[in-house]
Amino acid sequence: MDFKQLQSFIAVVKYGSFTKAAQVLYSSQPTISSHIRNLEEELSTRLLIRTTKCLTITTRGMEFYEWATNTIKSRDSMLHGWYGDTKQMIRIGTSTIPSAYILPEILPAFGKINPNVYFSMNQSDSQKVIDGLLQGIFDIGFTGMPSDHELLECIPFYEDRMVIITPVNEHFLHYRAEKTPDLAAIMHEPVILREKGSGSKKSADSFIESLGMSEEDLNVMARINDQESIKNLVAGGLGISIISEKAAQNLQRENKILVFQLPEHTSHRQFYIVYHKDYIYRDYMKSFIEYVKQYY
Image (cartoon, rainbow, N blue to C red):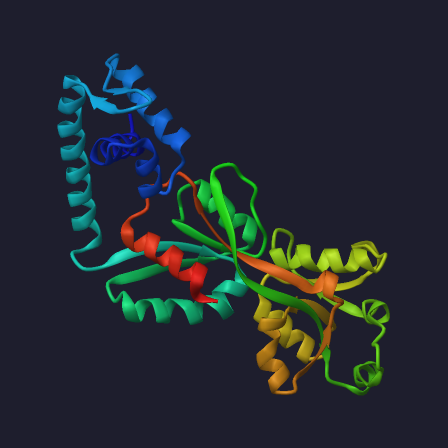
């Protein structure tokens, strides 16, 4: 047996309903039922009698409920002492754009109304964030690409656009002067790409394919993991790149790069908050998830 099964059983007894227990635990009713069934099989004991009209707790079920409640209290007491009396930690895994340009807006705002919550944040590419969630390294993830893994909930919370950025020079100012810049011609310039596994790379690939081109058709000068390095190299004249419009805004305002909008059908991208479907989240973690969903 594990803690998730114990928490499912406690919630069913407390609320007298599998449906209500699933809602409270941010889980599904089949998952709650599976947890109870596994406990009963392991204990070789009927804990609950469920009919279409009512839910009854057996005598052994009440005994187990007292033990399970004390066990969860002991665990919570240990964790409370482990993490400190006042601080509540959320372990976040995040891809580049949310880390640099979105979470710096969200986290301070959430912190003002939840001063006892603090964050442990690790930046990586989207795929590694998803892997970290599945491995239990992170509580919550922020990615630039969705996950269809059956254990993860993946919800879009912020919409961005991809743009081409170029150096500010006479050559690219000529393109800028055109009523409809030739994006295909621009993409034949030396280009800097993101690493494989990033959401930005997948979005860039989609645009390149819409031009009837592939990565093999490009003059790739470098592959760089860091978004800020890419922007600075473009500003310095090494080549062009395709990046998030939000990431490009600061250098665009300073007139250090030129920005070219992509066609509507290829430019939009979503950022996602990702978390376990069956993870038993504490109240402050649930509050943070809901806050992010509503922030934008």
